[in-house]
Amino acid sequence: MYDVMSPRAEEFISDDEIRESLQFAADNRGNRELILGVLDRARAMKGLNHRDALLLLDCGLPEVNERIFALAREIKRRFYGNRIVMFAPLYLSNYCINSCTYCPYHRQNTDIPRKKLTQEEIAAEVVALQDMGHKRLALETGEDPKHNPIEYVLESIRTIYSVKHKNGAIRRVNVNIAATTVENYRKLKAAGIGTYILFQETYHKKDYETLHPAGPKHDYAWHTEAMDRAMEGGIDDVGCGVLFGLENYRYDFTGLLMHAEHLEAYKGVGPHTISVPRIRPADDIDAASFSNAVSDDIFEKIVAVLRIAVPYTGIIISTRESQAARERVLKVGVSQISGGSRTSVGGYTTECRHDETAQFDVSDLRTLDEVVRWLLEMGHIPSFCTACYREGRTGDRFMKLVKSGQIANCCQPNALMTLKEYLEDYASPETKAVGEHVIAAELLRVPNEKVRRIAVENLTAIEQGKRDFRF
Image (cartoon, rainbow, N blue to C red; front, side):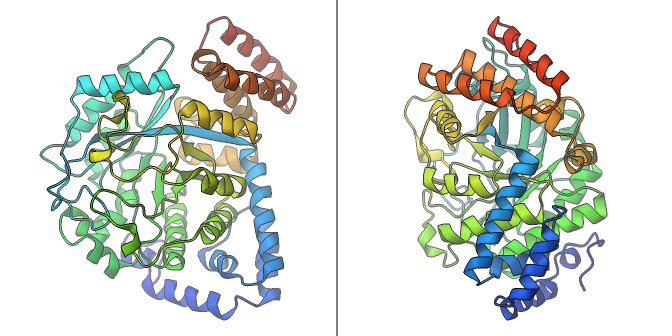
């Protein structure tokens, strides 16, 4: 039975409802009148339910698909402007007791060297990330109560926040660790985390259990209900995601939106972010062995329809994707990207990439400076802003500001000020020149005259050596 308000995973993610939605979309993929009706409703920019969104995803009418992409671009401009939030992952440990068949950290893998960072090594990694210019991290670790207990994670968060090197500081630590208890989520909240991130991998229960044959992650309900427990533990912002390519993409796309609908209905606020990774090769994992691989064309449309369906939610793409693939999806919906990433444990403190402890192969190997300049040259504003989290604009408070359109009065100047910090402290001369030109042009687009005046004053102060201004 499908029940969006149920606390039970198999009811708010109903296999029957997904299959009925898949059949509905397949039956109507050429129904022009019906699809245009959905598209007209979507123009209100208040989102779509999972069935209507799947109909847009399955639409087989080329001229209507052009309208779908155009609306996605319009919605992205409305809520996010041309701002792109920057972050980097930080891998603490690859010890893991799960048996995930798509991840090289699985416990049967005896070839991969196992490594866990000490607090001193974590501090060194943070210095390296700060010297690149990063302000926002996503903490990653395998599930292993012996090697990676919650106390280790909490101590690591304290270490990350404590490191201040030159003008560097990590201002927001998002956490991507295994599903845990309400008590542990309360501890993470008290430690000052930003977003709690957990990928579902796939919403297909039977395939989920096959892909996770052993270990705590085998429990589908425990994993799928984790966001509810996180919110019960006081965490305002949660981030969902699936690993596209494990299951039929239509199935997981529908489950992902059903999960977002459940959180909105049951907890009062939907996901802060949605991540869209695709299966990648790594160590003993051959991506070609997964028959549900998603093409670049389909991937672009998934992102576009997600942007239409959940207009207020950040969409994240990592360095799993190539420069070309990232460029395509930036235009239609992505609002956060990583740059200069290392997916190996201790990878930032080595000059060369040593990927023997990496979770997946990185496709975009450019430095953060190269990524920033690329974004600037495409007309984007690379933003290192963490102001909303630090000002208490999280959860439903953040969503109310976004839905009202008022968040732009904060986001635009904050993006420009944090970009200015990056240009002054870390950028190459080429990147700085492009960035200064972009800041000058974008200041003219700040709608509120008082905000614009204060932003100009703060930008001048940043040139003079002061840091950390925010609206």
